[in-house]
Length: 313
Length: 176
Image 1 (cartoon, rainbow over the protein chains, first blue to last red):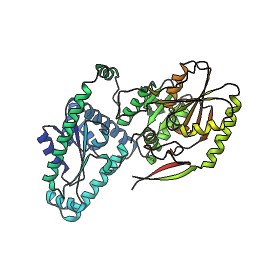
Image 2 (cartoon, rainbow over the protein chains, first blue to last red):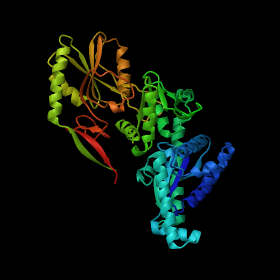
Image 3 (cartoon, chains in turn cyan, red):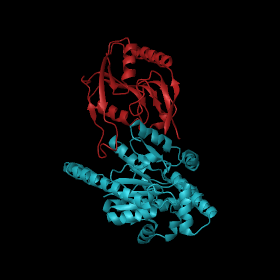
Image 4 (cartoon, rainbow over the protein chains, first blue to last red):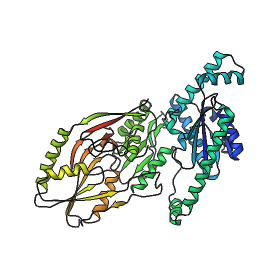
């Protein structure tokens, strides 16, 4: 199955482009509306949508956002196993990064042009339209930093970057359609080649029952451990850290991995260095309460170093 | 993204430390004729200089193991891509590494070589970055312990670059 992710600057026409593309390719369109429907189907509150593409502050909000993101990411990843789709935003370019069956597009336009289009669409004066565009850009940038710790507009992330001012929205759609078709054909050829590999490989796939990971970096870490024959368990234990006066647990810590042979708990964090203080605090508290437990926090920077040392960017 | 190199260890410091390691190893391996197992490719530079600093008879051999790469083989497992030419059963073996960070590949290598029943198995690494350790590995000899940096030069590469530098640098990324 293939996933085409469309990241877009506010006012650049990305939503419309994604809709037309999905129509032309006969792919399902996954946008805010489709996500809202999926949440309902999963029996989750539509209230969770307030965390959609929003950064958060405060421990409680962060917890709920994490819950929302887990549900969203699991839904998107499992849907990609079943059918091809066009995904609008939601950090799809990072969630499906390194997936050979994903194609990543960034739709952009110069600031002034976007302001002009926003003025026309929303019938706004220039100043409020400028503010709106700036606010949306800021919010998106912050959200992607918080959730994936990646720079949104880094061109290396994308397979195709289109400027809807110079190409016009119609021209950009045509170009993305053409590029996506080329990619899909190539992807089809390559998956046919993979499918013809000995059945052992498929058996390997089936044998390796992997849990649902909260984050792609955890999945990759698990693959790396498998590669080096290091046994692991995913979130096997929760350590209570704080209790209220009635003895109810008010704070707990569930490290991502346990490596039984190393007797080591590992917590991967994809947050920026300056945002990890809470995790550090939890790890310190864990060591105070459970001195026999070895826990290691792998910060995003360390993790990138590890991948880079293996020649992976 | 652009990069700059910040000096960490200069050639003279590296040479001096290798001479010390050579003396220590020569003493410990007196009369034992160890097999020095150089792990390709980064360790070649260190292994060559180390052998010249060891004054007791020894043998140099090479081994290479595949490294984790999602692109090439997502379902793969680590394997030896170039094995030793020397049987090590009953012999003293010293693994020579350029750097030990996560310890994952070294952990595999130790386990693999142990199955060949050597008389003794020790590890000598030029650089040790304990802050990145995931797998417990015993390090018997080490040149330098470094903080959590991305080291290049003197055999250590970044996408196959910088191996040829005589000094060791920290590769620092600069966001444009």
